[in-house]
Amino acid sequence: MSKKNISSLIILVLSALLVSGCLTQPADKESIDPETYWGENPWPEIRKQRISQLLPKAMEFASVDCWMVICRENNNDPIADHVGGENAGGTAAFMFYFDAEGFHSRVYSPSGEATALDDLDIHDEVIGARGSSVSMAVDFIKESGFKSVAINSSTSNSMADGLSYTQRQSIERLMGKDSDKLVSSTELIYEWLSIKLPQEVEILKKAAQLTSDWQEEAYLQIIPGTSTDADIAKFLKQKMAEYGVTDGWAADQNPNVNSGPDRGHSHATDKVIMPGDVIQIDFGIKLYNQWVSDIQRFAYVLKDGEAIAPDDIQFYWESSKAGSRAALAAMRPGVTGASVDKAQRLLMQAAKSESVPWSTGHPVGYVAHDVGPSLGGGMSTRIRPASAKLLKEGMTFAFDGFHAWKRADGTEKTISVEEMAVITADGAEYLITPQEELILIGKK
Image (cartoon, rainbow, N blue to C red; front, side, top):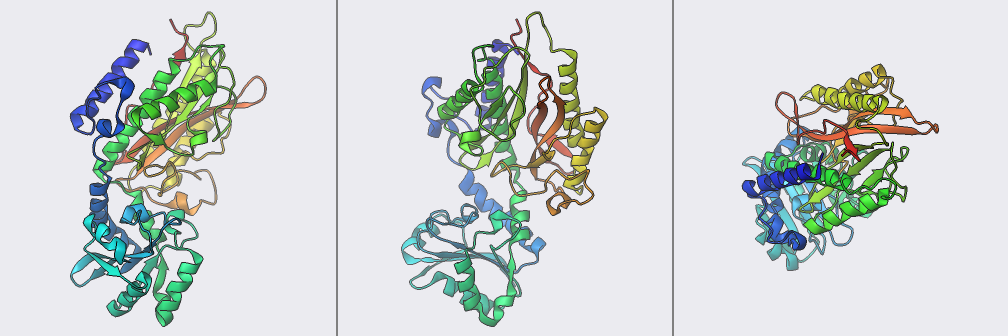
């Protein structure tokens, strides 16, 4: 793709964002003010909707009457930002429950923080506590006669495992003979976080589009024989800084630019990009410090005399792309993650691809590897619980089509066409237009 076409694409994408109202036109691209460019953070309002619309369904799915989240300063629960407890100083107890009148939320907060928390207008009731917030919450649980109370203690879901050992001891002591009502919030949090609201999907689309556009722009910077993988990673870091976005995952490994043999999840090195190289960029950004993209784009560096990629490289590309399309076609409500993985791996086998250690895909949204079904284990006789989970409408995934081969030096190289998609009522849709052709470096 030419510089002119890339520039036109970027202009079109940013124009679309402007029309949607999520962006405002920067006066000077060289001095973008992120706060002005991105506008007001939509998370506070979206969070309210998630609590009122999706959380009751998640609690019903998990068969719990009440959910208690304990938030505190410096060592906070990983779910704190989702319930409004991200600014907790002293220990606060966040309660979500059903009674005869319906679904409610109540917070027992240190009195010095209760006013500010109430001002956020997230919860039905915020009660200032001068004593122990947890003790007051447990008293409320006992008075209400709940049959099951979910707490954030889990062996399988890190997002549902925020309760410390000492906090759990304290709750069990206060609950006394009623401590047998305590259950893990694993399934509740799984169901709640794995589903995204439509407006969240729109934000993820914007994140994915910028991620893809910037990768294509980065490829235009390559000077074969001079540029290094690290140079291209640095260019993308500069784009992130310019637009006021943060890393989609560990900063040292984002982006991963790799023009040599497979390195898996790793950092970009000082390897010089040479003619004949297949280049992978694995890159993700976080918008509004909340929503994450995960997209890969691939390029081939033409050798002298080449106008197109050689037949073997083109075959590897087409094979990988076909795997991505097969995975998307298999994604719909009610199927398992393993079945999606199997659809892609059957094509890998037919194309005589080398095996790869990675799953076909994973949930993506609040983090790169989000809560939800794993798109893996399709060819295994023992499917992991995460791969046996069912896909549901509103889930979002990053997923690959793979083709791996042996290079002349015996090392392996993999093309992994990674795109993002959302599960719809009757199938799945790419969040953005997928990569259709290898980007050719050095084409005149």
